Image (cartoon, rainbow, N blue to C red; front, side, top):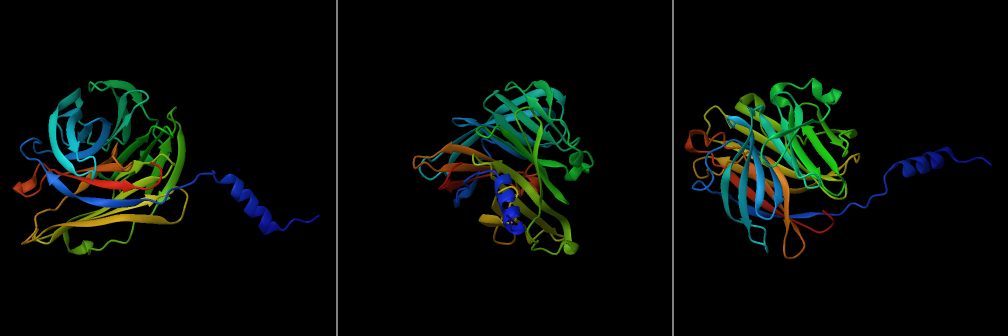
Length: 314
């Protein structure tokens, strides 16, 4: 009996694809907040939830390698940020290696931090000391330039996978299992930019951060940072996407634009993102932290922002 070749190919592909059910997600955006009296000027580039009101935050220009502990209190109905304070720094005593992303593993009670200076991911105890474990570097990340290297980091306790990606150029999203073995590699394509880069004094377009969900999908924050020569007219355009690895399409969940002009000074370059606690209605909070370049020129602020993620599994 002859079997239709197209039908056979379809059956083989169907069995090769993992049988996962991906949820349709929706995001409700909250306002951004700054807390200059309780959070000193910094270059905050990554954030991860430790449980309760506590978060670990990295800075790409802290004097030493390590992380800060933030206390962030939320409205448990809306997810909006009520207050935030920096509770201090936990040092590894090593020199800073341009820390960009941070992820907490609740199974081992340790943290992973990406370093853009050498494109390595190192493990840390909660007191700031290094454990000595390093994620083996894959070939695609060995050749990355120093300022366009590993940017984002997220760990999911249910799938037990650690996810990372580089910032821009040809973007590769990579996951590792609990044995730190490479699992999945996906090439990712950015949305088309809005600004004319040739007219900029400073320009950046890439993935600022990512967040791993329980169903194996991820949230990706694309951001375009445009600064003209006169500085006035600067903007950051952020797009939050739901991405199912291996699928050709991505779903945009939210988009917002912050500006520096004659009437607005809310410009915020968000570089860190993590899942936070479950709210009263069962939805989850997404927390974001912006890099103010040490509150550059007294204009930029250390903004924090929350989003409410509703429907589906997280």
